[in-house]
Image (cartoon, rainbow, N blue to C red):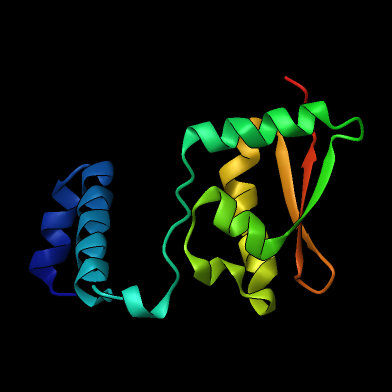
Length: 125
């Protein structure tokens, strides 16, 4: 670092110097980030709120508050990309669905070597 740069940094308040570093670092990361990866990853899961409410209601009606559904049928029923029906990546689908349903008190897992999705109501709010 040059003497001039260290002198100018010394004159700035510490939080301003750190803020400038953060901004510069963020700009550098944006410059090196890949822009288009649609072909390399599955799309985000977007399930209509109405469908999410239907899942919750079904779990409330079920005495055990637990349902096991064929993965392909569930993917079709909720209307998400068919790429989520791949049994080899069912654990990834379950993790993604868990994030989608977590605010509703629903935990999602996979069963039967990825053939089924497991839905469990964990909070009855």
